[in-house]
Image 1 (cartoon, one colour):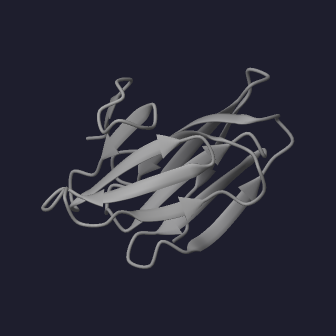
Image 2 (image 1 turned 90 degrees about the vertical axis):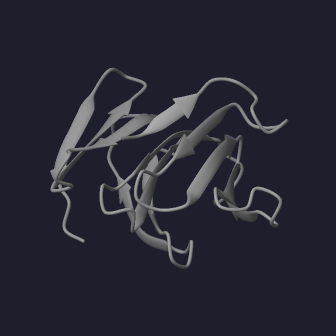
Length: 126
């Protein structure tokens, strides 16, 4: 289950997400995603910077824990491989700035919402 908190839990960022199948804790902080290991919160963080200057707006872990999807004001959804934190795929639709992302429980579908009130649902082919 995706867990998020609007609190500034770690002293920066405004949303915190945890994966139920991996040890990753992700803090959404403007153009940054700060990844921490739940097993050792004192270990150095891994930082992912969004391309350009647009902020991340939402995050969801794939049920397998292998991918992290992130929506952005740059009108994209990016899937990051959680083993390398590199972009595995980028999706773009003409529905405005992306605001939210979710996966179906079995991971076969994803849905993303834009700021114009539209939602895109697609088959996840990973």
